[in-house]
Image 1 (cartoon, rainbow, N blue to C red):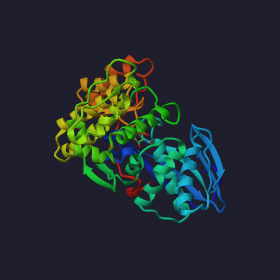
Image 2 (cartoon, helix red, strand yellow):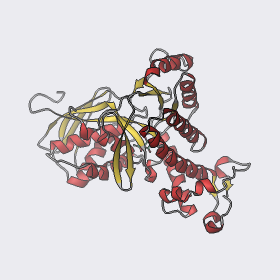
Image 3 (cartoon, helix red, strand yellow):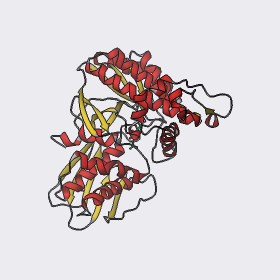
Image 4 (cartoon, rainbow, N blue to C red):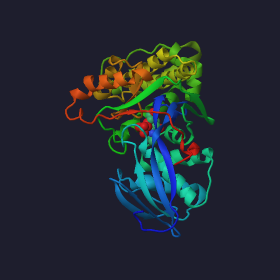
Length: 403
Ligand code: NG1
């Protein structure tokens, strides 16, 4: 090991995930449908007797810090923040313990919408716990992990951690947050998924962070202005479907106000105008929630056509309503359907990164070829090394036999 010989080396690992459907809704407490990948972050570690945490990762260099109860972040973009987030999460709930020496390896591409950063936090958290002889339940881990991610600067939801921890092999994970639960939905054997990179990098610890947080704020503001206690209540009320939602009029997009028409029993609710981004965030969130329910039904009964259509609808809503897509992702999704995919959509926060592409397993080679021809060959320099991964549903960290 990089930090000298001796002592027993132990292992912890956590997989990345791809979200199949349910985008930008986990942070509003709504159910989502990701699956864990066979690809993972692996941590080989050796417990120490002091509080020093030392880690090395190929391509990212070596870091070390003293584990204390009041860790603060180092400058944004430094990978040490993920280690600190894990130490802070463990320290906050179980107390500061013994540190460790760790070597980290990964076969997950970074900044690709596959949640490599959450996988790193999950794997490092498990390493710290194991180094200190602690066992944590899924619920306990979910109390601290999403919060730990805020330490890095993103106000994300809990989807990535839940999927990385509690997915089952061969299954998608229907994750509900209120109350927390994970239901394994078997993926039909003949369904296949590709994850393809758009060639635009979405570096979430950088500029995209504010755009992501703004979507979250707009959705929350819309809910409050409309007087709903939660999105679940808004979806159940059917308000998004029954009311008239006029398109915004002339003017600067973000400032335009829209006022849904009043319904007798909702007079109060509609008296507050929404700006366009709030309206659109509200409609995306409610629509996406319905699509998740429909997608689970489609998966349960092997209805590939409906599942594919729902993915395309999700992409259109992320592009037109939430405005988190980009030209490359839009083109990639189109190229996928032109190549025979049943559906495709951006996955993860968007603003670049990857699309998830759904097709019959037997069609995957043709879809891959079509993407080369229609998408990657048109992008200078990308033809040589396009990032297309076949996403096979693997087990979460809590169910792995060999980390
Ligand atoms: P990505 O971009 O894959 O890390 C982020 C959030 C998720 C979720 C999606 C959008 C973090 C760690 N992850 O995923 O919780 O909100 O965006 O659906 O912030």
